[in-house]
Amino acid sequence: MKLIDGKAVAAEIKNNLKHEVDAYRLSSGRSPHLAAILVGDNPASQAYVGNKVKSCGEVGFNSTLIRLDANTSEDALLHQIKLLNEDPDIDGFIVQLPLPDHIDEVKVTLAIDYKKDVDGFHPYNFGRMAQGLPCFLPATPYGITLLLERYNIETAGKHVVVVGRSNIVGTPISILLSRKSKTGDATVTLTHSKTKNLQSILLKADIIIAAIGIPNFIKDDMVSQGAIVIDVGINRIESESYTNGSKLVGDVDFEHVRYKASMITPVPGGVGPMTVVGLMLNTFKAAKKEVYQ
Ligand code: NAD
Image (tube, rainbow, N blue to C red; front, side):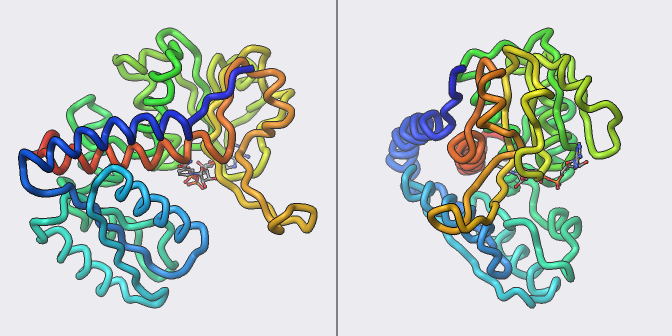
C-alpha cells in the first residue's frame, strides 16, 4: 500500500505558489487578498478557517477574517457579503459552512459575486464546471484532482465509485471525473444514502471516493484488492482512550482498508490540506483575473 500524502503535496504546491505570488507582487504592487466570513463558534469551522488564514500567510496573500456572532441575522450577513463583493481590494472570499439554522445557505451562496466565489459553490461556477468552461472549481474536488495528477493516477476508462452526492464534494467530483480531461474520462457511479447494494458496487470500483460524513463507514470487505481509495471524510470521534479525548477519522476504516488498497489517503493529512490548496489557487486566479475579467 502506498500512502497518498496530501500534506506533503499541499506543502509543495504552496511553496511553488509562494514564488509565483512574489513575482505577482513585484509586477502588480499588491498582494492577493482572501477574506473569510465565519458565523458562530463551531469548533471545526474555526479550525478550518484558521488553516485557511494560516495558508494565506504561507503563500504571501493578505487575509481578512470576519467573525460574526452565531445569532447574526441573515440580512446582516448578506450586507457583509455585499460589502466584500464591492470591495476592490478583495479578490475572493468564502463564507464558512455550515451556517446557523436561521440562515438560508442557498441565499447566501447566491449573494456571493461569482467572480469572487473562490470556494466554487455558486451555481454559475458549478454550471460552468459541468460544461468544462473556465470557472472556479469547488475547492475540495479541485484538490482531489490535483492529488490524482500528482500521483499519476490514471482515471481514463477506470470505474470510479463516489459515495455521497453533496453539492460541494460528491456531485462535483463525479462530474469532473467523468468529463473529457486529464483527470477525467472515468466511468463514474455516484452513490448515496438511497443506493441499494452499495457493497457490490464498491467491489467493482478501481477508485473509491468517500464523502459521506460517517466515521469508518467503508470497511475492508467493501473494497477490492488493489483499489485506490480517496477519503474525503473528516469526523471527530470522542473517546477517553485518546490522548486529547477525541481524534479525527475519515469515512474509510483506514486501519483495515489499507491492507486492501493499493493507494489510500490518510485522515488527517490527505484531502483536507488539498482543499486549502484548491482555495489558494482559486484566489490567485481571481487576483490575476485569469478566469473572469
Ligand atoms: P453531506 O452531509 O452534505 O453529504 C453526505 C452524503 O453522504 C449525502 O449525499 C448522503 O446521500 C450520503 N450518505 C449518507 N449516508 C449514506 C449511506 N449510508 N450510504 C451511502 N451514502 C450515504 O456531506 P459533505 O459535505 O459532502 O461531507 C462529507 C464528509 O466530507 C464529511 O465528513 C465532511 O466533514 C467531509 N468534508 C471534508 C472536506 C475536506 O476538505 N477534506 C471538505 C468537505 C467535506
